[in-house]
Length: 360
Image (tube, rainbow, N blue to C red):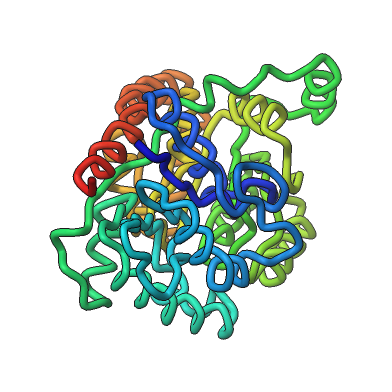
C-alpha cells in the first residue's frame, strides 16, 4: 500500500496549536503501523518545500507531487490548505480546527480573513472527508458553508503529550525558583490574542487587589494579532500595583514545569475550536477555570469551572475562593485529571486511521 502524504508545512516553524496537532497525530499514526510521509516542511521530511512559502507550495507545487508520487491519500491539517483541484486517484482529507476569522473577524487581518473564507470554501468542496476537532467546530462549518454533513467527522485532540515532555534541567528549576512566585498563584497560558480575552483575567485580579487580596498572575505566551490592546491593559493594571508577570513564549520543558506549579489556571477565551491549553493544565492536575464559550464546555466539561466571557465579578469570586481554600483546589484538581484522562493521541490516531481506511 502506498504511504499517506501528511501535511507538514508547519513542521519546521515555531510550534503553535496546529503545529503540535501535526506532530502528535503524525507520531501516533506512525505508531499505529501506518506509513506516513511528511510533505511540505521547509527542510525536513520526504517532500520539503525549500524556500517557497506554504501557500505557493500548496497551490503551485503540491499538485504535481501528488500526480507523480500517487500516495494513498493527502491529509491537510491546517484548516483550509488543500489544492484547488482534486488529483485523480488521491483522496483528500482536511482537518478544520476553528472558524475564528469568520466568527471573530476583528481578531485577524482583513487579508487573512478573505483568504481563509475563500480557500476554506474550496477546500471543503474538494475534500473527500473532513475532520473537525470538536462538535462546535463541526456545527460552525455546517452553519456557514454548503457541505455534505456526512463527510464531517469529529475527532478530538489528545493531551497525553504533556507526560512525554522532558523534565526541566537544573538551570530551569533555578530560574523558576528565582521568579519568587508565592503559592498559590494564577496562570494564563496562550497567545496574547484579541480573542483569548486576557483582559478579563487582568480585571478580575485587579478587582481582588483593590479589595485587599494580593494575587500574582503569570502570563505565558507570545504576542499575536491584537496584542497591543492587551498590553495597554496590562500596563494599566500594573501601574495600580497588581502583580502581573508577562513571561512571553517559553520552551516546552520550561512551560510545562511552570504550568505544574500554578495554583489555578485561567483561560476565558471568547471562542476556541478545541482549547488545548486548559486541557493540558487539567492533565497536569491544575484546577482550571474556562469561559462558557465556544468548544470549552464541550472539551473541559465537568473538569473545569466555567464563567461567562464578560463576567469579571464571577471570575474574581472563583479566584478568591480557590486561592484561599486548598481543599477546594484539590477537589478541582481531581476533577480536572479525570476529565483530561479521556483524551489521548492514540485514540485520535485510531479514529483518523479508520477514516483513512474508508477512502481506500
